[in-house]
Structure formats: structure tokens, C-alpha cells
Image (cartoon, rainbow, N blue to C red; front, side, top):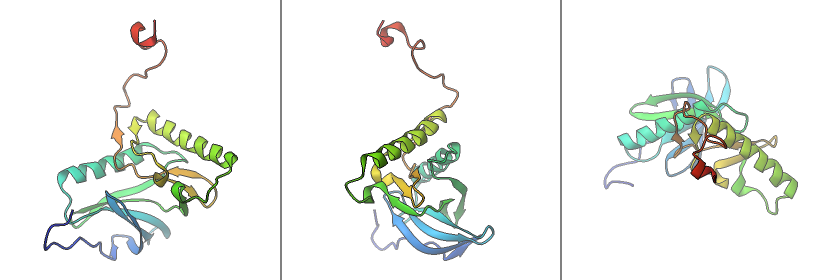
Length: 181
């Protein structure tokens, strides 16, 4: 939401070891830029909170997203490299992925490919759930098929973090009534 007379924040072209190259996309929660990490000499994606000035609720959601991604280290989940602030604006740095989101795949998708994508998504979600992370916004736009054919879960902006020490629930762990007994 824009306030009258306020200009949306623009990130600096360079900060720390990062040099922004071009915008990659914008969503409800943030803006993502392609950047060059000058220390490690690699391309990365840098996400900033979108809008004029982030409030504490937005900042906490952003921190939750960063913690969620950091908890889940899996080949089917985007990797996070760093979290920080430039000025008063939080940012997170993640791996840069070449490919297209699933909502941009040409149709029809062969059933064999659908199966491979589904297995990759299931593995990524299972890894997240094992770490107490609920994605809560799974949709084709939030998963990417890389150029080498790997599927990656993205955008943990509305994720919920659970206590990983919580006891698992399964057969034999539920009260008899809930287990159908």
C-alpha cells in the first residue's frame, strides 16, 4: 500500500559484497534482484521487503521466511546464503536459480514429467516438515524447474515454524478415539 507523497524505497546498486544487476520479480511480500556476490564471484538472488517502509509485522514475517529456508537444507528447496539489512531494509540472499516457475511450463506437461515434479515437490515438502516448517503457500508460481530439470520450492514468506522437538503423530501415537479405535 502506498502512502500519498511517499516514494517506494529503491535498493542501492551496491552494498556490502553485492552488486545488483537487474530485477527478477516482485510479489506481495518482496522484490527480488539478480546480484553478483563479488567475494565469492557468483550470481545470487537478493530479496528485499517490498513497499515504502516495513513495519514490525512485515519484518517478523521476513525473518520467519529466512529461518524457515535456513532450517531446510535439501536439494528441492532453494538455499539461503545470508540475511542482513541495508539501511533499515532487511534482505535475504539465496541461490540464484535458472529456470521457470511451474506456472510457466508449456502445456500439456507429459505425465512422466508431472510425476518427476511431484516427487521432487514431495521430497522438498517432506524435508521441510521434518524440520518443523510448513510452507503454507504451495502453488505453481512458488516452485521452479531449473534448467537441469530439478524442481525447487521457493517463497517461504508465509511459512509457519513449528517446534521441531514436538513429538511426531502417527499410528500408535494418537488417542484411541482419534485413531479410529
